[in-house]
Image 1 (cartoon, rainbow, N blue to C red):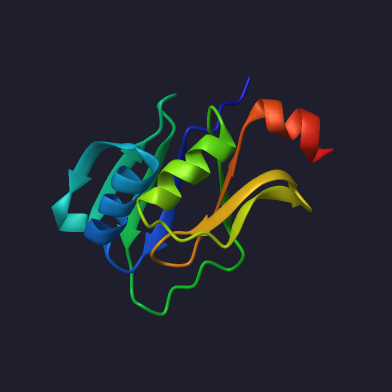
Image 2: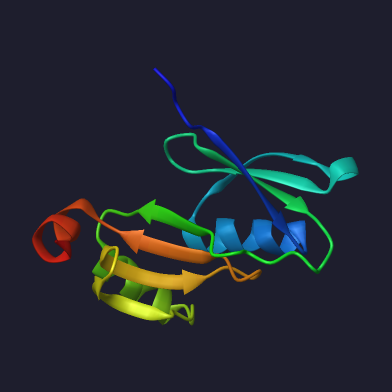
Length: 122
C-alpha cells in the first residue's frame, strides 16, 4: 500500500502562507524550519503540506489543492462572513460540486463535501 502524506509547494512568503492556511482553512502548524524558510502545516488527518519559501517568480502552474470539509455551503458562508474572497461559491463545476478560492500565491483551493459531491456533483 502507498500512502501520500506530504506535499511541498513553493511560496513567496512562508509566514504569510502559514498564517493563511492556519487562519483560513484551520490547518495546524506541525513545525517550522527557519533556516530553510519552511513551515509544515497539517490537516485533521495529519497530511502535511510544506510551505517552502522560494523566489517571487514561482507560479502555481495549475496546481489545485482539494480540501474536504464537513459542509461546503456552511464553510463558504463562514469564510465569506470573515471576508475571505472566493473565485466561485458552492456550485457544480467541471470537477464536481464545491467552492473555489486562491491562497496568497494563487494556488487554487477547492472545497468540497461528500454529501454535496454525491448529490450535486455528478
